[in-house]
Image (cartoon, rainbow, N blue to C red):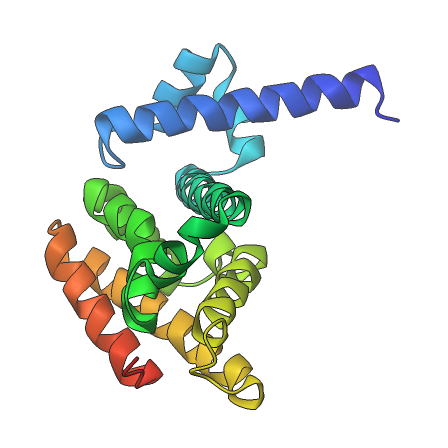
Length: 211
């Protein structure tokens, strides 16, 4: 059970991150300062720094944006599956939606592609921060497991990838996807269709799925 002091600290931490998220999205990474975050959050600069410096806050904020996109996409998939299960006459159409494995993978990752291109300046700063080292990101921790598991489901649900090969192939898909996201961010790419085409090409090469 948390103490009142611990709860106040948690709420302050959450407020700082929420305010940082708003300012990063509204003003961009370069246009946001620790002092500006502190003023908007109604706390001291020292309090903000106790939560994290500007780069650490960006990583936390962008991870939350990524997690929200994945959670929303996963919920949509779950609702679609439930709808198909409740309407047997729609099973064939539902099962065939999205085409082959690369197409379905592109559909699942589309929200992340949109996120990285929509917030290209933040994505570039995020990628730069991670590449420089010293920061841990959600894309490489718990979220990585969720994405890889979803990739594995997609490539095995119609039997086009053997279970023995699924883990390695899902891992390759994940790292190819993250690599393309970061490459696009570093290059300042803001064209979701171009990035999606690159992602689709990489997925197709790894899946080699002709269904």
